[in-house]
Length: 469
Ligand SMILES: [Ca+2]
Image 1: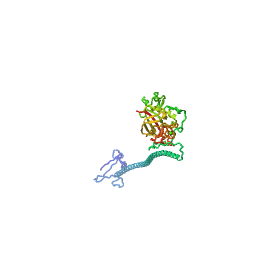
Image 2 (image 1 turned 30 degrees about the horizontal axis):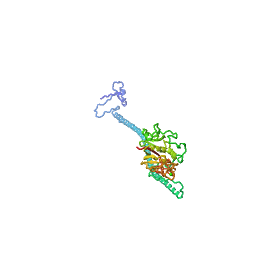
Image 3 (image 1 turned 60 degrees about the horizontal axis):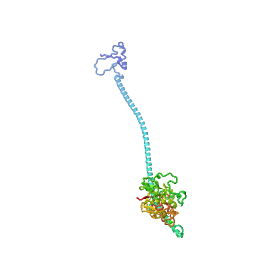
Image 4 (image 1 turned 90 degrees about the horizontal axis):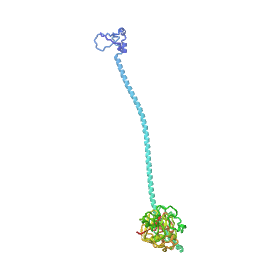
């Protein structure tokens, strides 16, 4: 016999239920076995099956093995459930992630769309800008070509103007000749003859923007200007104007001429007091020290038409005008100055393009009044052309004293006083016309035939003398 004891404390619930039947008999003594199994002594060849009811095993009874199996299956299923739970959790996370990604993707898409729109906008803007640039470039090109066209047109017009100016000059000469012919044709020989006009028409007549304005100086058409100043010598400041900045009358002197002024150390051009040898009269004159080492005594000056040069004999003898602008020093003064020694003459001419040219004569003096201040000149040199030699040896003529070789009075036609021949290649005491080429029946402008022709009035003129070196 084999006795097996179990303590109910160590048993599980079903085991307790199985063993509860024998429990009552043995519950008196807690120290003894709770259950006593009586197992027949036999040879054990297989598994031992415990039964509370008897030796016959009940097929429907739940064995411990089954329970273990069930437990195992349960735990397995639990693990599977846990695994599945995990998978489900992971899937849920993934779904969330997917949702987030989708949202992000949507955001990205909208951002990309926005950027694309911006890019498109930029491209369009740049295209517009480049178009604008191209348009501007085209406009610049157009303007440049227009400018070039206008420049060439201007040159062309200038050339045409030069040609027309020459034609005007020649036409005037021709008209005068025809008029003379007409007069002769009608047998009206009693009418006063007109002096021949200067035929010289240089190839390049200087031109200026203010052409043909013919702005004649005031009072020039009056033969004998009135006024108390008419019989006075040229003055420094007759109109009460402030004295010129560089023209200063020094306390030194008087000097015999401007050359002596220069030798005395004065190098500023301006007004100086002179007293030619053998005379008692003091005279004011402009000394030019800025030209060819200086020492030049200026006796005639034209520059702005401010002084009327259409005057009588007495005026031309004594002088008139303003020393600091336009003036005539006076034939008597010029005579007295030039008889002091051997003098040379310099004629300075300026056209309306501000170009200056010169005519220099190796000697210069006048004969006395009894000889009508006859002009005596040496040989010419310079770049203005020689338009004065034809006046050499001629007496001076004014409107009231005709000494010229012409049948009429040259002063009447040329509106000045000069050593006229019949009548002249130059008329530096004529009418001051603004702009150069002028229109007039007679050649009465300030012309120098070899420089500009008879119908080109010069802008400024100076005549000056200096002892020969
Ligand atoms: Ca005459």
